[in-house]
Length: 115
Length: 115
Image (cartoon, rainbow over all chains, first blue to last red; front, side, top):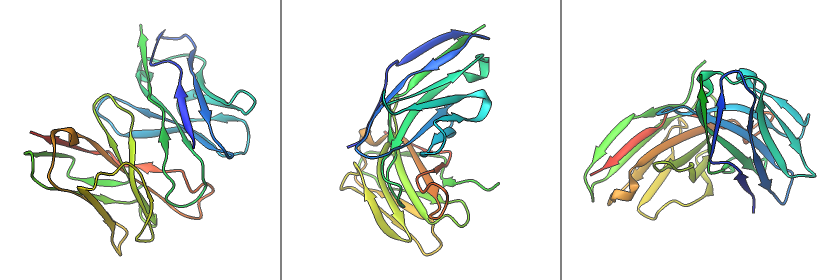
């Protein structure tokens, strides 16, 4: 069965400094991996996705993630944090590429950005 | 671009009452998913439908039922509501034939409060 582990429940950075949100996954097959962001009292927005193409994936708002099979990791990074990046981030895995397959969410990482 | 529509956005019910949540997928999307997000929790998969047939089933209580209609919209019916059912309920949709079946587009959610 697939699962994801977000290694930090809370990350605090200063505006303009790099962001690193860590995620490890477990999967029996070649997984699809996603990062979603949720701002307070808002819905879920897709930041980026990995689906067995390039291992370095670029997403929206300057975020990117690198799929490392040997480390079973899919860490999310951003070179320079902005105040508007403060939100909840979810690492998500989906194992089977077929209609109706559930997404499995990690527990989430709360990103705080201070000025 | 059109997004997933959920109604109502907010719902307040008493214990033991029933509730019906509606989801209208992105036009032409044929697969619908339901997720439940409790306070401070990660979203948990409930159930999905592809072409009006149940596709995958997660941690959906027996008190809940769902279906997808001929126009692809879906309804989540919840009976004998309990305090623990208070949560944000997300609907997501996807389209078979997209590069990745499991890229799901989320609606804004319905916040259910059970008193």
